[in-house]
Length: 400
Image: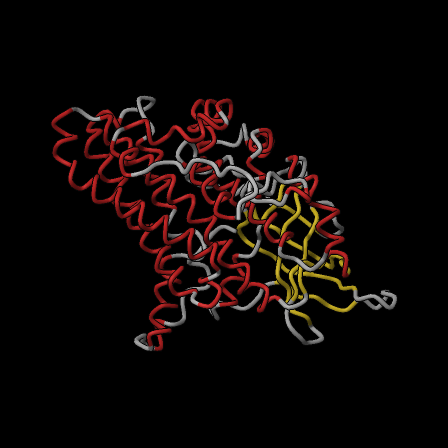
């Protein structure tokens, strides 16, 4: 049960259809953050000048503490409250929501880790926004679904004492929230000596850790998205989130994907609200479609949060995959309707966020796990896929 009043979920059927009323949740709960995001949404999407400010802004508004137990410095509540927070932010800035997803997901990793010492060491700075958290488990989630091998290798350290210690080498091509002012990234590694893979927390200033320049993205450029390389980076048991990645990933995957789906919820709600900004004739032409999409979106949000809260998706991940695919479809359709009702105004610079939301909607199908990967997984589970269809390209998904 929630230990504090849950945030008002952003948007309902009525809110989505009645224009800006569907965007009131963040404006009521954190008005200064909502105003900052509205003022800088285009900048956060198109360049990196404000990338250092996103995590502190989210922290100042208290969003990093949502769903974190009060005994650990959080605001209380549940993971579903955190999903609502991601959705609320995504309605104002998808880039900021992407950062929030990365930060809050890493926090969730610590909450679900048996390594109490690691949690006590890192969590305070993550909650205040002093330290950025990067999920880094795109590769691991694909490994869990037998899509690709792990890309990081852990070798036992000869200089270690009785406690376990390793040198870790390898790289991850795309990680979000690698804030230059300080970050810690989660990464899964195979052990050269055998046994289950581990997941480590890798600090930005650990020996052998190299962050690339920001990736040259067409959007979401204020998200500190870059590649990470480790070369003989020394780690020990104090840095290990879990010593059994496959078992732990199954348990944490619903939160990983649930928070990620919050981005789709918020973006779709904002696009549906945007249809109300067109002229009366345009609104009337799409009213039935907008209403149907809004109802579908509400139903998907309810199923998503219930499945995550009740643990259903731990044992039935296919249902979560289907929800993720369905939400991507709603995002696409909602963004298209906003284009239709906006007309030529949406094609002029500086007059609306329609073009930005089109770019954001185009990203939803490719963020890991991508729709292609999920569809292949579902087909394999149904036993209906051809041999060539089960081997998805190594990197059809993107950021983690």
